Image (cartoon, rainbow, N blue to C red):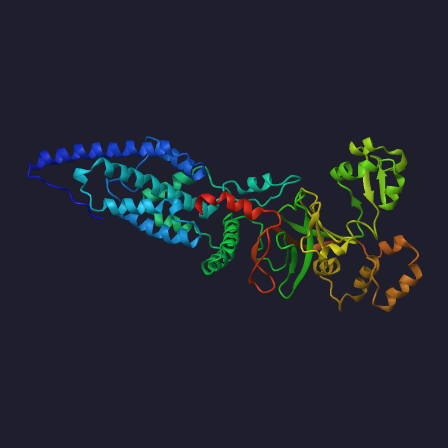
Length: 494
């Protein structure tokens, strides 16, 4: 961009000195006007705070107007931003691009030797707004437009941590680095490097370009935001894994040659299932249910002293020495104070069902069978205290333990007997005839087994995600209201 000076026939040296003085004065006036924009900006986004910090530093350099007219880089960046912001589904007006375009176009024909106060203000506004748009976009595309997303998700949780996804956060000097790149003439390159590169993001972005209906677009944008977080809580290149999508209330067990799909029951809205990843390491057959202290306090303690209640639910009480106590002698107050452990017996009627699938995590969450399979027929299956109930526990056990219906017939028959199903082979039928009246022998017919090698498990929350069966994008509802929370936080960009 070339803006010419306006000569008047004076002596060359005198004119040069006059121009230098006028340039210094105008430059000072632009800096002062820039300071006014900084002081008036009350936006609270982290990118905006970083921007104010940069321009409040007396050592800052002007990036887009260093010579008192817009640089070619400013014009190039604006064109790239206009396309990129629309592609991401946001409003260019929310990034101030209309005012930036107005300022650049207005300043193109201005003579720098005769800058008027209105031109000074435009230069300052252009400098500030373009930096603001640049920082907002680059930070947003690299780390998400929602500041502190994990903190926001966990605020929405009332009973336990809702999200443990190890979401990456920007470094303290991110803004300074990005602005330095721009000062070095690399603004467009810096912006392009911040664009998400995952296949899922591109899939969502392409679908957004094809979608006009407002609600559908917002769903896609909420999931694009999740994909900007660069978290590790999503399958990447594993050949074998288990995926639980809480929003879909579905589980997929994926291997190179098969995909096993089943419904799940996840945590209720007050006891949400945490979002996290782990390694499934053990299949427990006929598990005991060690009732969590909170449930004992809230739901069991009111029945203190009622031995019929404990018998009806197959509960028993033990002390710190593992001695079994008579429920009639344990008071409500003692149970509420968590002085004793309450456990449910193994077998039929156990709340965990016949199979439990363990993975290490700090929330005592696991996958398990259930004694109320009718819940899987419900459309809304956000019902549990946080753990994940699976519709096809036998099939999931076979998947994790690499058991084949042909090669492992006898072992599978023993598993069937242990979990209360009828065996298929004569050998196990004969064993059951001889030992069927020995409940403990039946419960122990198949031992607990380690999952080897470990199988990754991912508990995610995406309301638009590729179905692992065909990799086609599928959409679901928002049972926990997380989409609504993200969209509210993204409103300044909409």
